Each structure stands twice: as C-alpha cells, then as structure tokens.
Image (cartoon, rainbow over all chains, first blue to last red; front, side, top):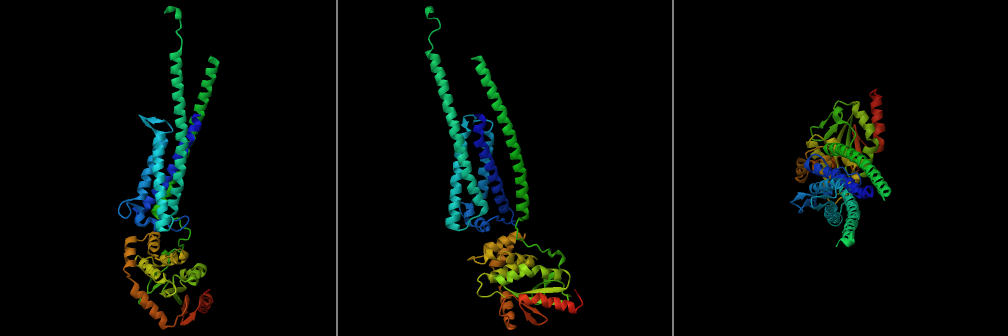
Length: 176
Length: 240
C-alpha cells in the first residue's frame, strides 16, 4: 500500500527533473550570447527563443525559461520531500503538488498556444516541456486522490473507534 | 488475535522494507539523471554543439583570406591551379556541389594544389540569397567566412523558404560561436550590401549566367566539368 502510493510521487519527481534539465538548457542558452539552441527535431528553436513571447510579460519581462526552471525545481523539491512525508507542518504536500502542477500545466498550455497560433513555429525543447507537464499533472492527481482516500479512511477509522469506545457498555454495571 | 496482529506487523515490516529498497533504487536513478543532465547541459549549451550537419572541415590548416579586390579565398595563393567560383547560397545545385564534391576539392586545397576564390552571384529568383551572401561576409568579419559558407549550404533547406531568414542566420552565427550582437547589426545595417552589388556586376561583366559556374585559367566550367579539368591541370603540372 505504502509502496504503491509512492509511485506517482516518484513519477512526478522524475518528470520534474527532466523539466529542470530542459529549462536549464534553455536558460543557459539565453544567458550565453555565443551559444545557440540546437534543435534535435524541427527547426523552430531560434525563432521561438528569440521572439518577444519568450519573455513574460511579452517583450520586456522575465524569460519564460527562467520561470520554467524555477517551477520545475519547486515541483521536484516538493515531490522528493513527499517521498518521506505527507505533511510539512499543516501543509499537505499532495495538495501543494496538485496546485504547482496545475499552475505549470496552465502555463505550458499558454506557451504551446502562443507557439502554434502566434509565432507559427514549434521549438523542440518547449514541446518536450509541454509533454512533461501533463504527465506531472496526472501523477499528482493520482497521488492526491489516493492520499485523500487514505485520509478519509483514517478519519472514518478513528471516528468509528471513538464512537465504539463511547458506546461501550460499563464494565461492571453492578458498581453503579 | 495476537497471531493475526503479529502476522499483520510482519507483512507491514516486509512492505516497508520493500518500499525503502524501491526508494534507494529510485534515488540512485535520480542521481544518475542529475549527473547525465549536468554533463548534457554543460557540453551542449556551452559548446553549442550536437548539430549533425555542422561543418566538418577544419580550417586551421588551410590558408584563408581575402584577395586584393575583396573576395574570400581558401587554399594557398601560390597553388598551381586557381579556381574562381560564382555561386549563390540559395541555389540547390550550388549546395549539391559543395555537399557532394566539396570534399574532393578540399583535399586538393589541403594539399596546396588548388586555391578557390568565392564570388557572390545571388540570383533574383532566390529571395534570401543576397541576405545569405551578406551573412557569410558578416561571419567573415569575425574570421569565419568559410565556416558560415559551409553551414549555409548544409542547412539551405532550413532557411530558403523563410519570409525573413535573419533570426535563423543569427542562430547559425551562435552555432559557430560568433558574437551574435555584432553579427546581427552587420546584417541589419547591410554592411556588405555594396560589395555584393559589385560582385554581381563583375560576374555579369564576364557573362556568367548560371550558378555554380567555375573559372579555371579563363575557361568557364560547370560543376560536372570542374574536377576533371582540375585533375588534368594538375597532371600537366606533374602532380597526382
């Protein structure tokens, strides 16, 4: 039971790690003026990376590669921590994972729409990230549902135990 | 009751042991991916490498430079055979020549037998050819004319149909390790436009009508005729 429930968190951590490598590559090629993106497939990398849409807000903001790097690092950190514990203080890690993954998924959908509809060019490294995000999201949803089921059954168990203890008849009725 | 709970505890302990073993394996996998990821990011991003069709000619051992009238050459100026090439970066036949027979020519150049002088002749039917010619010259400003020449031909299909190839060319400059800012401003300012125009005019003056056309000892040749003529000229010089 315990082992099975860890698999979605492992999957989330693995995919987030791939996301870190991907976005780190995009970030470094942005930072170094002399390095260009190498497209493993397709040919839209430079077009996408050099467009105004590679910044948020477009044209004059933070490079989306940096935002991706930050987001994936957070997701990776939280899912690694979730392999050891369900909660940090009052913070439920499965809930936090769903929240982070949903944010990442929405951001990724936005970037994919921009690539297809506005720039008209797809970048391999961005598509890779766009494929990673739904994977992470599904893993965190599976994990969250399992965790919620477990929490509920624990709550039912303890309330049953409590109510059965309350309903227990006095041990020696003759004493009263 | 007690046997049942003992068995339950045993099963739980076994499950915990198995899950901690799974975790240890998982951490090893994570560690391996981190190492591989760091190696990947550092080598690929820092060197801008990984491109399968990147130029493979090593120009460190080949004399390169510019002729007095401003044309780039490769090969020793003292070579017995001098070849002038009239070419267009967007012309498919020119790319075919470089990709298929370029190596043969490079061998002659490396041996000091041939000097090749490149003359730009971007044709009107190729909308990106003039900009590509300028891109090669802008790379030449940073001493990488021939590297950009090879890259433009190798990746011709990538940029030939673009409505504006500027970003792509800047990307190639990055691939070659050039200063992208300098390269881009050279290209957008049209720094070499006058030279390209002169080159076209000079080619028209000697009635070059197709690309690629080669001139060896005043004789106009096409790409099929070139290598046999070079071989014959070298044989006449007593070279293999």
